[in-house]
View 1 (cartoon, one colour):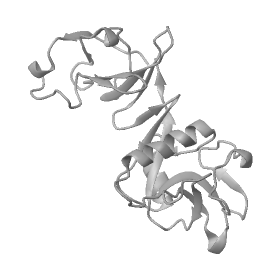
View 2 (cartoon, rainbow, N blue to C red):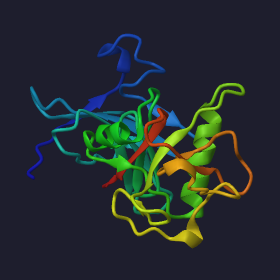
View 3 (cartoon, rainbow, N blue to C red):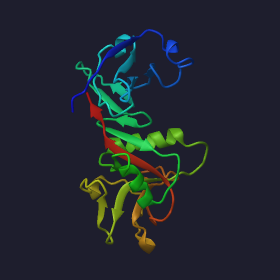
Length: 221
């Protein structure tokens, strides 16, 4: 895909978007782990990216015209590799994660994810499991229990597979002790936020409605 781009210096966000400070727009987001920039694209008129005039965002990077807003975080390596996700998604390593606020059954959840060029999340490492679990802990309010569907399911008893075709590794699974119990055709898996020790995966009926976690590959630029 040929990408047309124009670098626009934006000394003051308020001159373009009044009140843009502390909102999405040409601003910097400081986080404990890195610094991020919000990139805007306007494919319907002229494709440009807007970066605030700050040394951390000076290196202009190219992203596809078809995506209007991206959140990019810069890595710690000297090459200044950027990991970019659609705005509203959370970047981690080489993937982007979407944590829904609404609830759906498992099949509707997967359909919703595929509509965003993603799948219900596969979780294949301990660091990925920790990232997802810690994100949910930070966003759950009070003592409310909110379960999140992930992309693990079975069609035959004990034959678990990831919907994105990632190979399932039973030795790198994070089940609640005693799960999966496979009672009454509980064929779909969710992160059970009421459980925290050792693991938090639980199998449920697919018709139950929970939040969902979608996962897609990040753009590395």
